[in-house]
Each structure stands twice: as C-alpha cells, then as structure tokens.
Length: 88
View (cartoon, rainbow, N blue to C red):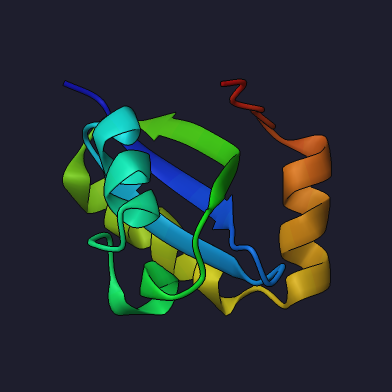
C-alpha cells in the first residue's frame, strides 16, 4: 500500500504537513478534530497537496524536508506540484 505525504490548509490559512497510508481516513480524522493537536481547533481543513511515496521511511523523510520549507516555498510546491482539490 503506498504512503502519502500531504498538506492541508486549515480554516485559519495555516498549512499542516503529514503522512498517511489512507488519505481519505486521515483527512476525515483531521476534520473531526482527532487528526492531531495542530488541526484540532483549526477545522475544517482542505487537502491542497498530496504525493505518493513507496514506503513509510520515504514518507517521513519527505515530510521532514517539506516541513523545513518556508511558507512561500510550500505554496509554490502546492501551485506547481501535484495539487489536488477535493470536492464534496
């Protein structure tokens, strides 16, 4: 099963980066307030970026690299990368 590195935009426009092996379940967890402390009070979140990686190890390394980027570079990654928009 592939792993995903993802970025969500919170309702206050902050960006959160994480990893998962089940993207839909993870986004639902964030929006229910059970995803993590960072997003708990910033719901709803919107998935703005996702990329597939082959292993959890690779996902953790990629997540760490993305988290080190300044906001402007994260926004550029979202704009130029594998941008996704989830429609309800």
